[in-house]
Length: 132
Image (cartoon, rainbow, N blue to C red; front, side, top):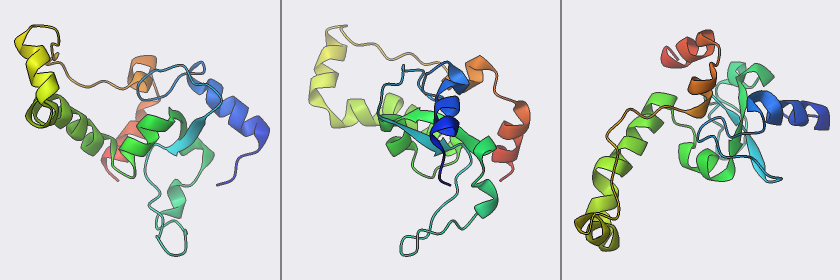
């Protein structure tokens, strides 16, 4: 959906100008992300779930979070982030393994909580996302 400048400005302030996912303060380059994925057809660009292409389903996201989340559900993305933390980074990066051995990097084994969850997004949106 195409946002007007006013809608975009209002969306950016939905969480005080912060990314809904990581909490980073947003600059000029940020994305309006569908909390519950729209999933667009690669060739036509048309959404396969047009009912999700509404302003109430949009959150402000930094470019890095939006690109990493792609069209995943929140729970699938949460699992992927935990996989990065628990397996992939240490397995795939010898520099990180070395820093861990020296005690310079520590991974916190806590649940992944998105910024919007800390800020109290309406539970109805989360329930709709969980039940697709």
